[in-house]
Image (cartoon, rainbow, N blue to C red; front, side, top):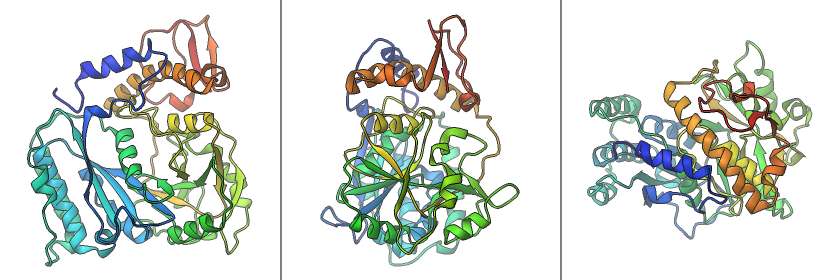
Length: 412
């Protein structure tokens, strides 16, 4: 194989989607080698108990966000990191250990798991993970400059681009939170409200048990350097056109957060104690960041790379009977504002492949929940008289190029 997956393997997965009525569960985890709990936080162990654990994913170029994340989230964190081969791993582990030496919160609360292509020789992994932290803080004031140097070394290897197995990584990170009854799945460059861990812990302690409830943390986006607001009122005063913040993916991916209903959320009064304010009306395309129990369906690993990842997991959770309850004044902010709907060509190719897989995956939903295609009719309109697929503006950016199916599917 010349990449994370050979192109032929990806094609086989896509082809199987059109013929199989049930995808294997779990899906192809065997494509990757997983190193669970390779580096464990000093204050974390399998017996450590916390109400909620944050799970996130990264590759070398995004690890610098962990520094800021450690200021925003003071509870346990489970990080799944992707690497290609031994040399890549050495760079990743070097930077992780610098972060651990320099920042006590990362050293104490963050546990790291590593994922690599199964076909790569990772004979040096055990030695890399055995590296002990130094007592001397090196590069602490310039850790991002160090990261840039490491990334330059990585680029000089001239590796071909590999699909980033985000769903595999999300499941590994989530499994790393198993000692907590709830996990909070998010992205590494999405910063929780200051104090959210403590407020969520208090909320979950007093909230009556709800077996099928997912607690939505409303998501926004801002520039990389905007000062993070500490309260809902401060956030709203700086949110809107020509202001510092806006709803996450408002420009790039309209349905991403739409079901949260921000007009309604703005009117919910803030109280001393956080509460579940209302239930979101689910629609396909919803990609909220939520706090949930471990029995919610996992991310489907047949979707590799970009497209049909978090939104398909949310769809399956909805079909499995989970409710999305929006928290009253919790929020999270993505570092960076995307102002275009245009995708890079490699993302378009991955979205196209995952789109074909998704068309077949609906059979699995029907088989498992008894309402795959029938429920999907609420999300899709079939136009048999059209000869080419039409995709809603939600998916217009990088619209998949493919041969026309028997019935065109229009994503609503």
